[in-house]
Image (tube, rainbow, N blue to C red; front, side, top):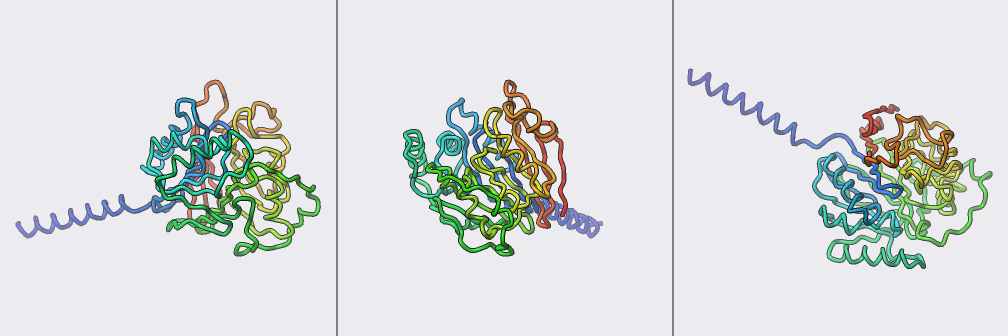
Length: 343
C-alpha cells in the first residue's frame, strides 16, 4: 500500500512539473500591437522569449491617454517593462508621450538616431524632454546596419539620421523596375527624413517599420536596386501620408499585408492609400481609424478598421501574432475579427 502511494505521489509530482514547464515556457509567437495614439505612432513588439521593443510613444497630454494605452497593450502582451524604447524621430506625435510613459512603466534602454536635426521650437522642446527622461538610463545611438541584441527575433536598422544601408540585405539587391517611372522627390529638411527605419525578422516572417521616412530617403533604399527585399507585414509609413509611400518602395516591398496607423483626420491620404491598396500581391490593408476626410472610396471595409467613430473612440488596437514559418494572424480588437495569412 505504501509503495503504491509513493508511486502515485511521484507520478503526481512529475505531472505537476510538466504543467509548470509548459506554463513557464516562452510563447512560440511573435506579438505585435499597433496601438491607437490618434495619428501618432506607438507599436509594441514582444518576441517569443518575452523581450520587448516599443517603437515611439505617441502624444503628450490628454491626461496620459497614450501612455495609458501603451501600458494596457503591455499588460495584454503579458509584460511588465519595456526592454528597449526606439524613438524613430523627434516629432511630438512620436516622442511626446515619453515622459508620461516613463512614469508608468520601467524602460530598460532608449534608442534613437542621435541629436535632433530640425530647426523648430517644438521639436527642440520635445528633444530636451527626451534627453531629460533618458538621462539616467542606457541610451543607444543607432546607425544604419545596426541591430539590437534580442534572442527571440532579429531587429536590424536600415535608416538613421538621413543615412541608409548601402549593401543589400540577404536575398535582396535586384534591380527595381518601379524606379524608372518614379518622379523625383523633393528634399525634406525635417526630422521625418531622419527617421530610424527597421526590419524585424522572426524566422521567415518579416515586418517593416520606417517611421515617417519621406520619399527621397525611401527611394534611396530601393533604387536602382531594392536593398530591402520583400516583406510580409508593412506598417504604412508616415500614417499613410502622401509625403511618403512612393510607388517605387511600396510595390518593390511587395507586402502581403499592410497596417495604417492613421487618425480620424490624419494620414489616410487618398493618393498614398491607393498606392498601398493596389500594391501587387497585397492581400489586405488594415486601418487604426476610419479616415473621416478620405471618403468611402479610400477606406477599407469596417471589419478591417479598429476605430470607426472619432466621438466615441475606445482606442482599439490591431494585434498581430506571427509564427516562425511566416504564417501570421491579424486581429481587430474592436470586433475580434481576425484573419490568418499563410505562405
